[in-house]
Structures are given as C-alpha cells and as structure tokens.
Length: 451
Image 1 (tube, rainbow, N blue to C red):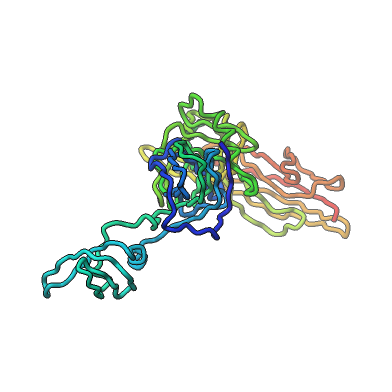
Image 2: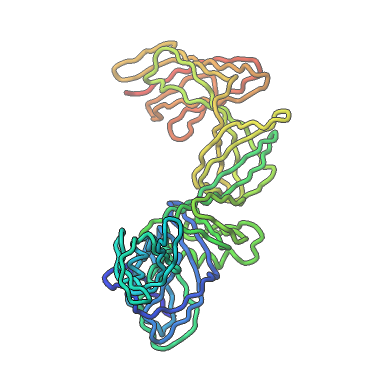
C-alpha cells in the first residue's frame, strides 16, 4: 500500500464520459478525534472495486468543512492518483436541466384548463424559462421549463460534498481504501458537576461534542484530545500512536498521556448528528475530600489612604484528584432540605493529576473586612503606613479568612505586626485569621518600604 497526501488541484476537470470505480456505501472502522480548537480528524475505511479502465474515484459524503489539503488517502499500489477535486452540486432546476440535455425526460402538456398529459421526449436545450424538446414523433417544440419532470438525478451531479480523484489503474482489483482528513466547526469541551456533601464532594465530568461540520457521524468510534496543538503539526500521528495504547480492554472512558497531551477514548460507538451537541459522561468520582476557603485581596499599603470595606470571596479547595481534568466549567451544588442549590461556577484550565484546585463560588454574605489608614509617615526615601484591619464574622460558624496584601518584598522593606504572616505568590503578604462565630477582630500592621 502507498499513502498520498494531496492539495486540491482544480485544473484537471472530471468529465461525464470518464469511467468510475465503485466504492461501498458502508463505512467501516470509522473514528473521529475532536481537538480543542474547533477541528476534528476523521478516519474512514471503505471497500473499493476498480476496473482497469476506470479513470476516477468519487468519495461521497465528506464534511462540508473539510480542509482539502489535509486529505491523507491510502490506495492500493496498482492505482496511480493524479489529482483531487472537492465537488458539491447543490441541486437547482437549471443544473438538472443542463445535466439532462440529450437525455430522455417527461413533459407535462396541458390538454385543457384542468387536464394534463405526460409525454416522453428528449431535451435538446434549455434555460430557466423555456426548453426545446424533441418528441417521439420527431416534433421539436418549446415547453415551459417548469413543466419538465425529472425521474432521476444524473450521475455527473454530485449532490453530497465529495472528493473526486482522477486515477489510472494497472489492473482490475478489489481492496480496502483508508482516508483521514481534518474538518472544521467541530469542538469539544468539558463540563463538571461537583455535588458538595459536608466535607466531601462527588465529581462528575461530561464531554460535550458540538458538531457544525455539515456531516453526521453514525456508529463512530470517538476520541477527544485535551491540549492546544500547533496546527503546523500533523495530528494524524497522535491518533495512530495513542489509539493502540488506550483501546485494549477499556470498560469506561479512558485516557492516555501522549506527547504532552491527554487522549481520551469513549468505550462505545456514538451517533453525532450535524448541528447537534452530544454529551458523554467521562468522570464519576465519589467522596473527594474538600475544604472551604475564604479570601480577600486588599490594597497596597504603600499607596493606601482612607478607609475601604471589602467583601470576602469563598472557595472550595480540592487538594488534587488522581486523574487529569481537561479545561472546562465546574458547577458546584449542595443540598438544603429537599432543594438543590447552585453555589457557583468556576473555569479551570487543563489541570494535571494531583494538582490543587480552588473553585471560586462567590461572595460570602456574612464575612466583611475593613482596612483603615491609621498613620502615614512617608519621607523622600521611604513609604511608611500603619493600617488597621477589622474582620467581622456574622455567621454562627467559625471561619478562617485569608488576607492578601500586595507589598514590595525586598531587603529594605519591613513589616511590624503582632500577627503571623507569610509571603505567597511572590509579593503577597498573607494573613490567616481565625474568626469565631458572631465575632470580630482587629489588628494593626506597619509597612515600610524604600521608594
């Protein structure tokens, strides 16, 4: 077998008098790999019958959004492939008329105002209004084009998006042919549901395939690849190498790390209609330990004056799960009495396994933080500010609030306070303050830094 990758060559036209090979209508071993980035890779195999005199192969039913220069077709060695065309003839009256010139047609002739008869004739010429036909009796007459009845669609009209290959064959043969090609307007994303139950949560994940490619996929093996591929690379290689590693004995959606990406395999064949979104469950993890976090970003003390009140954002913290999570939206729910409540939505990026995750829920109703300038003793060389922080917890439950304060960390900077702190994320002075229920706290911090 030999493999040929082709760009679309439009200079060689397929004419109606060429001989065509026969392709089976049934597609076998078909698969679809959907990528982040609104593209997908189609793989199909069909039975092929070629006679020595055949001049073309018509591969019908490709997606309208095919990238023709991505076509990778595998044909028997006895077939030489010269050129490729993309063909799609949208049916119109004029196209049908032009395709029937010199062929038998049926004409509806009015006998009176209410009755018609049908006669057989040969179409000689036509335009959108009138056509010239020759009857069985040899009469040449003009008839309205709308009164012509077509019984078949001529073979030269290709009414489905198709690839036409101009070929020569050394011999007649029967074989299989394989094709891979990229299509646009197919995308996938991950959606997650986190059901919170006390200090644990159940996580379910769904793969959503959005198909706008102009092609439906029947009984198709489905894969998705998580990661941002560089479009100058050929993703076909990822498919062939990774598929062999993950398919054996898969009972549920499985994944395989491969070349810096994650390749997911759906263990059953799917039907994906055009202009349809299909969802497939791929994660179902029970009793994941979680923690609540409460955090607020405060002002930079080097430039702060006056008084500001801040809301406190609440998070669900997951210390990590043992499988990678493709980027997507996690919706967090909890139960109150018999009602299910949405607590918040968070976007996550592609997250490797065992990576901590903070899911932002929203603003906590009962937690407030106020910062108040107590003194500014700035000089030409230094910025010097003393700030009072007041925290209030109106709920009945104890909570730990994290205060994040941007501040220049250097050898010339100093911080004076009675509270313990640490630097996080480089230059964030971080205080973790434990607040009892229905209680408040306040403390002062002096910040000094060189200008």
